[in-house]
Amino acid sequence: MSIPTRESIITQFRSTYGSPPSVVARAPGRVEFIGNHTDYNGGAVLGAAIDRYVWVAAATNPSGRLRLFSAGGQSVLELPADPGTRITGSDSWANYPLGVWRSLKDFGLRQPAGFDLFVESNLPAGAGLSSSAALELATALALLHLVDQADLPADRLAALGRHAENKYVGVPCGILDQGTSAFGRAGHLVHIDCRGPSFSRVPFPANAHLWIFNTREKHALIDGLYATRNKECLDAAKALGVAFLADLTPAQLPPLDKKLPPAQAKRAKHIIEEHARVHDTAEALQRGDLAMVGRLLTASHRSSQHLFENSTPALDQLVDLLEKHPAVLGARLTGGGFGGAVMALTKDSFTEKDAAGIARAYSAKHGREPEMIHLQAADGAKIET
Ligand code: ADP
Ligand code: MG
Image (cartoon, rainbow, N blue to C red):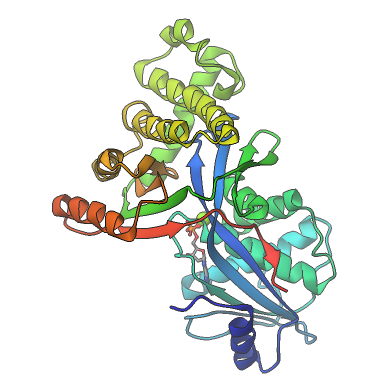
């Protein structure tokens, strides 16, 4: 597929709705660089906005109708007014843009009475790269432009997208996805202190590369497993007398962990050390010490594998293969775990051929090739001019 451009999107909008859009906005996907399950434990996380995007083109619809179309879809969804309930079935994707539109009101912002919306993307949906947040933020910017409010600060934009997903789609996500998509900048990672939340940027060298190896496997009991880990962490924090596990440092844990059942002690050690690794990674990036960054990434994976127990044999095998490659600096599972993808940090010298070699060795054991995506750290959500 050729990469969509502002012009190609305007052309498609025009052929869908018969007139040009007033605005084209785009927002990037993201990878969780490091900071595994730290968000709901009051910790920090580093995300990378990536050079894969969702684009949203929009125009005011003076009749007050809401019309929505996503490229590749069957037909335009046309609503005379807010349906008031969540949409089910093949049009359920529209809950994201409709949720954003409703959230404008919740945030005290102006809301266009009617709109025509066109969505295009080169970001795989449901692959853990956060197409949902990209769709929310691109929609928010496009709709805000229609009411002359596209200067909303990035932290409000991120909060609005998250609110839409939490309240109107019903997904209890943290701030990582929307925060990274809002604050991304080429040549930088986004540091999020989830407690505020507060956001900052950390330099990411141009000679470092990100690769995703997506196993496409998903644990059948994934929601239950997330809920179990969440409860284990909150119970451990309570038993240790802190509001959140991230309130403790690795040095403080050893005498305390005797108070915990063995599983909780492992989860607590993972979270507390992972929170410290996020801090150490940000410092190593500031110094330009990529070798150290790579070691921290792989240490994060081993901690997921042995302590948090949210890895899988397939993810472990990809990390084992990547770790041995001389042009790979480090690798770890990215996202919630129990399936999904491994992210590798590589040197310039790591090529498509090297990636294909890893995929071959992996598929010899697992029977199918992982999906591979080469990414760069990219700019956050913006209006395309
Ligand atoms: P992820 O955010 O990791 O990609 P989610 O399950 O959170 O996975 O979000 C994926 C959902 O977002 C899709 O099922 C769809 O409803 C919506 N979505 C993402 N991209 C698009 C798109 N280009 N057009 C329409 N809907 C999309
Ligand atoms: Mg998502």
